[in-house]
Length: 81
Image 1 (cartoon, rainbow, N blue to C red):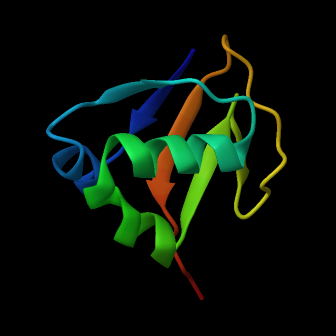
Image 2 (image 1 turned 180 degrees about the horizontal axis):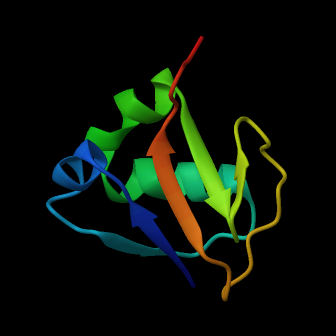
């Protein structure tokens, strides 16, 4: 199981949960697991999210490995200029 920390408004969409436990070993499996466990997160995920794994931030890196002891944080994708 992977513990996934949700940030900001994503927590409210997950019933107030700060941490969600999922069976996942890749970025894509984390996203699929979040959609299945909390369907209200689907629109946010579809707009784009970043996944921080052990301090490195990824976006659309579907096959990035996630280990059970990894620090995993999901946050809405932020655009900047």
